[in-house]
Image 1 (cartoon, rainbow, N blue to C red):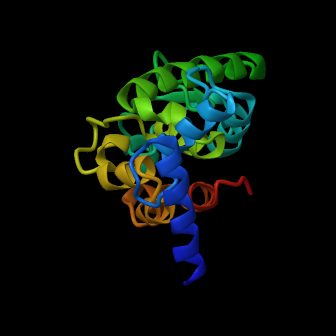
Image 2: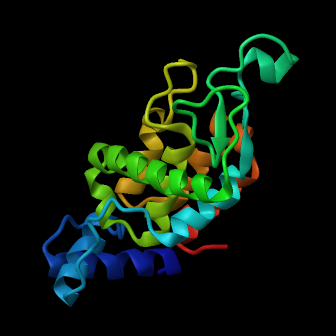
Length: 207
């Protein structure tokens, strides 16, 4: 028996004891049942943790002066509209050309925006609460970056367009989910961010 087969056989035995679906994959449902059995409840909080905020700071970058949307005519040609303008760590709501903020305001807005994004994604994907913290933060990070649905670019639907990848995450097929992340248009656009997040999705480890 190979190491993979041996691992899957062990997971099936654990799943049988826990009374969950027996498929050999340690997905969110299995993890949640194990935590409950051990008396360690999975977090159901939508509040972004400090690790997510730190990762978003790294990925979004800080800009204290308003900048045009990367897909706008202004960003591409230096002329025309730059809407929607963004500032700080990627805040785009209510921002106009010429706005300037402080670093303290940028951090406050980042936490508020991460909270708002988390409310949306946790309601859309209620099984997120059963994921381990590293993989949960990967999904939260992706959602912060692209939203759930992006009406500006129909070909780039936001996280809602990652149907197969999200199903792979939900069912514990993390290597497949990571491959789906890297094969996307989003990965081509954000480059290193996608590589790092895909690694975290596959391994469940940061770095």
